[in-house]
Length: 92
Image 1 (cartoon, rainbow, N blue to C red):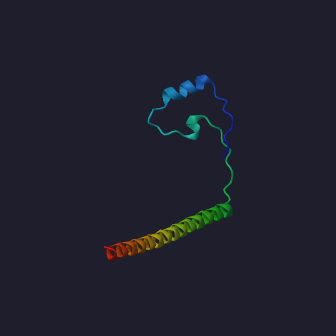
Image 2: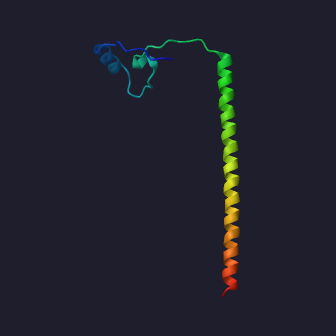
Image 3: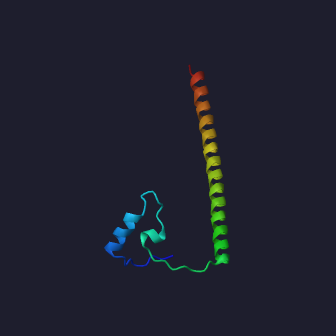
């Protein structure tokens, strides 16, 4: 949807504000916007949904890989600290 230029007068806006309760949710009509409805393209929508799902799968895979990298580096760090601790104990 595209926003069309607003052509509402100040009087129309004042009337709208006076009749609308402050807790009512804003809608396209209450904001005075013009819209042009277009037909839904179900094939395009399905493709878009599939792409979004693929991106989510890819994100999950990246997260898993990064966790494995961090775990691997943590293991190396623990092993390195273990070597330093044992070598410092043997020097004492």
